[in-house]
Length: 381
Ligand SMILES: *Cc1c(COP(=O)(O)O)cnc(C)c1O
Image 1 (cartoon, rainbow, N blue to C red):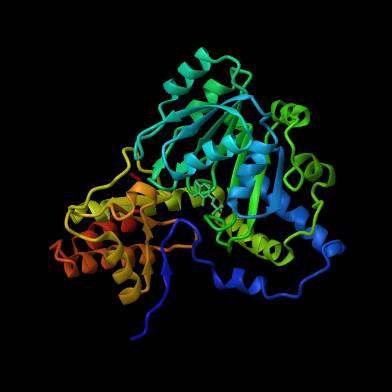
Image 2 (cartoon, rainbow, N blue to C red; image 1 turned 90 degrees about the vertical axis):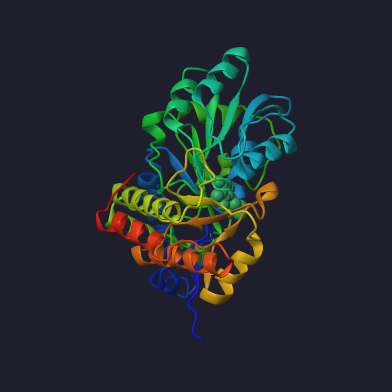
């Protein structure tokens, strides 16, 4: 049986052939003027993606490297910080803050729930000495998207910096770094950028962030942003040459679609997935689902891991498992990056067929119909 691979996972995401082929081009010396020109182009285009006039640095690492860079450059040992934890990736902020010996206040939110801006307001009032607030735009483990605009409004009135993990959220959800007053935004290549894993991005928005980065005493070397700033738009160490070719191709595609249209595409597709699974009588896990990834509760009596294995082996359709305590309890359908309307339909059709296979008699065609209606009308929720 022929089977095509469809990775509807929130990273890595599918990569267009044009981007893949860019990676096959001859590797240039990383100080070659032609390559330096490419780095400059990428750095400039990234500014429009991050909506900032500040610096956007390109690091050779996975997304977690950009998170570590943000912590290493803003946290002194013993500094009071807030880490918002509402899922696996918020937990990563907390782990990093611990690793850098911060005096951390962990703001725990039930997984699946979202951060209320008032919670941050209250904590900052009680702790005026907080130096940094670490939070997440799209919590990929639960499908929740947080209201960064309102949070930024609160944090920017204080001395604290706001650092946002937008690894899965950027390009899928609106994020206005400069306009909203977010100080540092981090991201990674294998999500909405339509390219393979391997690059991470750190956007530093303005003076408040730079002042902090300059004065922090925390030990750092590879991720010391001062070195990246000094050689900007060049890179202090060997650039990931072929990945930068691919980045430029991905950014070119994003630019020609237009950032607002990329946001709209994710909004429509996210809506189609949600309507599709709900029409099957399945429940969403997130209290405030975003347009990045949809977490669906595994119905009673079905083994989540076997269900995903069946989708993968029978249809080549790859969804993500639940992480940590959600393993087996949810599965996650991503519409992130290089995904089209018929990928969405295929995903919903796969769920319909697999649910019936596993004894959950969902009405065949009902999810597909609901998704088609959204897609036909380009409806956002
Ligand atoms: C994917 C992801 C990361 C980074 O993970 P890496 O495996 O290091 O690339 C960080 N935060 C969020 C929200 C993510 O979705």
